[in-house]
Image 1 (cartoon, rainbow, N blue to C red):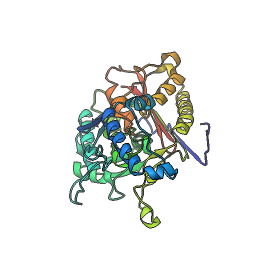
Image 2 (tube, rainbow, N blue to C red; image 1 turned 90 degrees about the horizontal axis):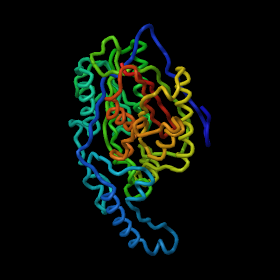
Image 3 (cartoon, rainbow, N blue to C red; image 1 turned 45 degrees about the vertical axis):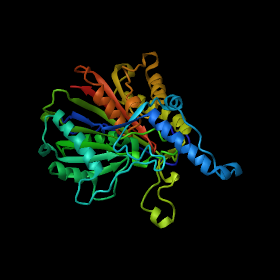
Image 4 (cartoon, rainbow, N blue to C red; image 1 turned 180 degrees about the vertical axis):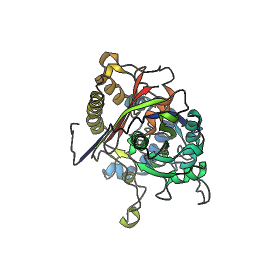
Length: 393
């Protein structure tokens, strides 16, 4: 991988390990979609009303140049910048309230199931059903996502307990690459025979980390949960399984996408919920640096398997921004780039972090036939890139 931009460290892992004749397959996948959605128009009306009040309230400081005014937004601006038209949210109440501008989520007691575990369970049950499995069939649970709502006990262990799964569980956070990194860890467990079946869960509860008062980022994310079962092919009961031919992961340090909220805010005497501690990014730098990295990563991954881009029937790419996806598709496929080859789901779901490529996989794989190849790829903060080459069984 070429190192682009300011890079301080690099770590890369090519997942081509094997153990005898063991083969790992994705035997089932599932999605849980929140019941609440917010259109661009709703979001813009709320934000613009907030901006008007903010600018009026701070008119003197704005005129003095000590603070910047809040710019107006528009539906056209959002769709042109991102391709996003809608997003689902776990809780809608509070987000559009110009006196609050964040979700209103009542706390739950320690004895109640957490919101994030609840999301994960819904998607997990759908994946188990698709794989024709029961919770008792699972050996390992991995919750892989961008944020967890607490440090411990692990959300994965909570889900393991709630579903009645034996074995062990753990959380892992690799931002928008969490899902592919989690599936790679599961594949390695299958190939090394330390587990027979692994349930990977991606409960992306992102709306609490969004600054809904920031025009350039308030529209980007949505909430969702996805789940994947990875197991030994010899035990697979599913009729719609995909062999994981190869996996590849890479990380390159970058400051261009950050979320600084954490427990150290308590001892730093700073406002823990200030804008600089929520999600923020240098979008143009990310676009310029990440797109060529992803293209090179994917080409090298295919070359390692002696494959060409023309052999891939479907590209399930990370759903961050339509302009990024279209550029990456064109660089990989040239004139063959199309919505059929690389489907877009972010118009409906927005950026759902690590779950985006898995949503695309769930919704756009039914037409593939035995032997057809596909690639799941995620990329994001870190920087991090994860890819999986699949073959329909």
